[in-house]
Amino acid sequence: MYSNEPLFLGLDLSTQQLKGVLINCHKQVVDEITVSLVDEFPEFATTNGRYVDGDVVTAPVLMWVAAVDTLMARLAASGFAQRICGISGAAQQHGSVYWRQQGVEALQQLDSKLSLRQQLEDSAFAVLNSPIWEDSSTGKQCRELEQHAGGAWMLAHITGSTAFERFTGPQIAKLKETQPDAWSTVSRISLVSSFIASLLIGNVAPIDCSDATGTNIYDVQKKEWSQELCDFIDPRLKQVLGARVVMATSTVGQLSPYFAQRYGMAQCPVVAFTGDNPSAFAGFESLFATAGHSAAVISLGTSDTVLFPLSAYPYVATDPLKFQHPDGHVLQHPTKTNEYVAMLCYKNGSLARDWVRERSLGASSSWVDFSSAANIQPMVPNALGFYYLATEILPYAKGVFRFEKCSEGDLVCPSGAKYKQVEAFSAINGNDARAIIESQFMSMCVDYRRKEAGALTGVAITGGASRNQAIQQAISDILGVPVFAAGIQTNKGVDKQALAMPAYGGAIRALNQLDTAVNSSSKPKTDSAVSYVLERICSPNNNNHAVYAQALADFEFLRDFASRTSSTKQTLAI
Image: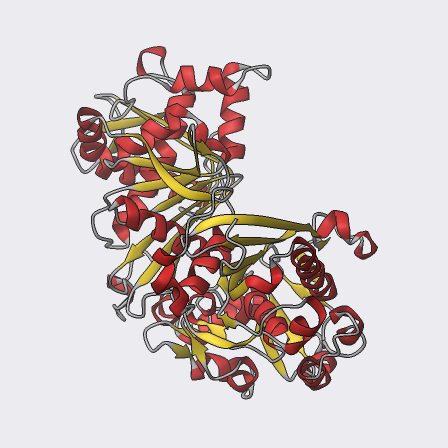
């Protein structure tokens, strides 16, 4: 190994762990470090890294503090710590940390002989348990914020999203309303991402613009906190958040002397931290750049998430009649000043696919059986299904809906084709396994088009279901683009596995900010390091893509019908 090789650290604080990824100048991954919040800090007695009390979901701030010290201690023990030349990272979105003035002062005067937890546990925080992204207790505050903005569509016009209970603005409003004594002691507010950066630089770090768009109080077009929305919650809120909002490529400070003295680290630059989703997207974009494709990312998990770039802000209309689809979220791009990232979230992901597998193929069936059943010719336009076991976000609906094309149908679609709602598909038309795949990814196609995004040239897929070949091919056929999987380059090829993309995205930003990167060609590559890469795994069948493209308008019509029907509770039994 090249012993003096500069290294760059990316961190990611998720719900259950703090992950660190070290890369070299060639963007090779030299090491990964994981600190389990559940296993290593049992004294906090969390459930999978958080406390759940009905709709209220929080996490102990001091657990996050302790995790930072633990990870840095492991870096020091590995011998890598002193070679780190830059740090950036990410964290779970929407969560918030409430500093007292005593905490800000303690942060600025850290003693390397004591742990971070020892110095911050007494009086640093107005609230010891921070609300996190799983919290759904702020419905009242969401409606009030939308009403003040002039309606849900107007709030989306300003902030990129309608009001969501997990978003930071409604959470702050709830804290002020329900815990006025605690609120009166708040000096500064950090998002979870900027909180980790604050610990590293020994001062309250500015919030980055991309994570700020997950608050419902940031004006995306003006690229600053909305004075009107902040004042509605509290006249001093803008000051408490910090008036300066930065790009995720901005250096926010130098590593605190605390870490230099305690762990032998250099006082290297710390680049702004951002949310886990935008950081992962930026990481994928760096891989797409080498593959020559514009990036879109589909994460297939318990819920499904789609991230894709936007060159223009889609919510410019101020007339509600022209503002029909304020669904999903529009984020400021973390690394490109005048670009944006759309994020679409679908609650019925793998759990719905699993329900279909068990219901249609039997409880003992495998995912191989599912793939075999789903690996047939397109069911559309002859039959379509929608599977919303949990109340869906996009569209707002619940229930299972199946439709078949027939001359006696009472639903007349834009193409003139007629459909009727059925309880089960006739065998000639297909099966639920194929129908749910088509439904989920045609929905993504509809919502992608509603954001007026440019043409895609490729899609990266990740998450457990991304290994399913029937799903891979359906995505490629429906979207009409090649599909890529992320993995680690080895001597035997690409080992496709889940990668630490939010942390990797942070490490890339740290690398890109330093002059060292310019001279990377002078440093030999490290034999023991590995590279994150994208591998093309399938290409679209043009005939199938034509079928889906032609059926998309009718699909959208029937999806809207399912949503309307669901709202009147006239759904078929699940």
